[in-house]
Length: 495
Ligand SMILES: Cc1cc2nc3c(=O)[nH]c(=O)nc-3n(C[C@H](O)[C@H](O)[C@H](O)COP(=O)(O)OP(=O)(O)OC[C@H]3O[C@@H](n4cnc5c(N)ncnc54)[C@H](O)[C@@H]3O)c2cc1C
Image 1: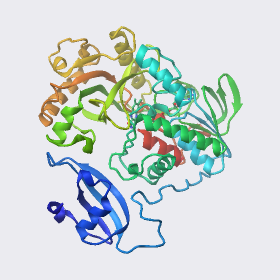
Image 2: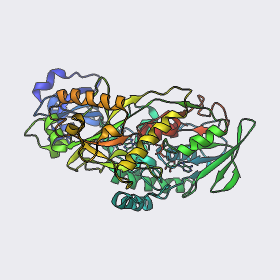
Image 3: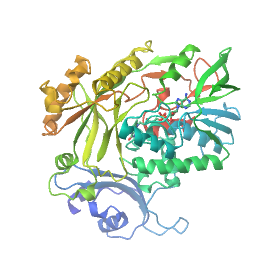
Image 4: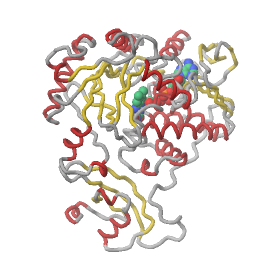
């Protein structure tokens, strides 16, 4: 503790960058009291991050505010957050009745924020409630039985429901903070408000989604499951009606939160003159390692990993980078269309699987004017992978050593991906080996990772409406303005 004292400075009852031993994570007021030699009150943790830099001695680094006198006006001392939940501001351009398509994070939070502002909301989701969806996914992972509307991408909770449940975002906005506050109110741990890398895991996410559903019902919202948006009609550049399960109905405002895997939605929008733009994304593989190797490399030896939790990493090379790292997780094969397979990472709240995985991806540049080639490229890779493994929805694997030696093990990924992607991955593997010795020897590559972000953008105005068709409000990852659970939910709430 004393060793880090010179890093500290005290500013109006704020202590920054002070060290917290792993064992003291839940005793932060006492840590501050020990540093200051004074009693402190109303401690509020602003940020808590695990610092790996001193090998063999990982610890937390914390920023906190507090007072030196008891403030009787404040609630009893509470380690968590200031009240995060703000009332979402009203969107004045929205009519009183709104239809939403997609019950992923963006659609759920758009529904919630609109309901809080007194709108009437009908939310249409092509998939099933999360508990029924869970059974379909379990069957898919066990037996390869694929359902088009109920899978790892589609169903209540969206693509986020069966994910790693990381709640990272590059920039925290008042909306992402408010979403974190909502999640805490729904039952998530208060830690997510201040941890630098909050994580809740797929088990917790499913539980929170059920509570969000209940909240939407209590506010008078309607959720229609197994209800697919098939078409829209547009008159004089204004949305006129929508077709759900073959039934047309008038619609003045449609919040489109269909995610980036709803490829048929993009085609349908394009046919009606809704402005789309090509968007660059990235493709590559998942690389899996024993978690013990990652823990030892990152934390050092002799550390109690139960206290640190599973270690992660972020690696950036000249030609490729790591993305969406899942410590203590599993690689899952995913499909949203028949006859194609992609990969992604998933974990439970305890992150206690013996494996770590991360995407290892290469940028794939797409021109704005090109609205076809992104999806076509993703599809081609996914279909080739499906053929390669005998059409059973498992994903092809190859050890990193065999990949570099271009030697077939079970499969040869050089036959799956284009030469330029493979050579970029090859170069990155050597770079990462220099940064984390053993990265190659311990690495297993699983491919293809194609759904990293949206390959298209549904171009929208400042108020969130489509630039070309009034009444359509694209939000979330599928709109191409957000990526990840938290930013997609925040994008829905912001609208
Ligand atoms: C396995 C996996 C792991 C991931 N891990 C993480 C992670 O740890 N952290 C993170 O931040 N992000 C993660 N992501 C990404 C994250 O899930 C997405 O960024 C996020 O879910 C996007 O939210 P969204 O609401 O915009 O769209 P989605 O979550 O894609 O939801 C769209 C919904 O719309 C529905 N829909 C589509 N078309 C129609 C239609 N025609 N009619 C009716 N409904 C329709 C779909 O069924 C779906 O439920 C992961 C994704 C996957 C697949």
